[in-house]
Image (cartoon, rainbow, N blue to C red):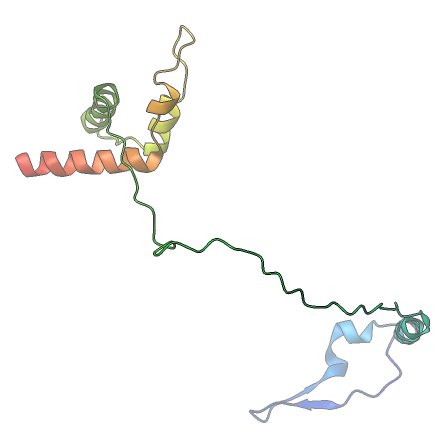
Length: 156
């Protein structure tokens, strides 16, 4: 069913024209649906103005003479805090070195996220490999692996 309106030609900047009547989506539009939607939209717009607007109560506030004492900011308060480094213990270094060596021997380097998962897994007796404060992040493991590779490359 065609919409009752005539479809004008659309001209583009490059001189080409386009007739909207050729579009299948336009051909199948029911003209009554368009009218219904226009009426519904008009009704919604008109109903907004018929609602009472909220009344705002204005209150005059006088400025007080007492001032609130605020603490002054220390100089350089926005500067980044110094990060403390926690040294690795020998248990962590041995575990990571073993993982690194296994990866070299098998020609399949370990992914730091997989090594991190291994650190957080339990052993057969239900104990964790490392305490909570000894666990490392994948970024720390990646950094250790890269430092180890660099040192071995320089020594050989």
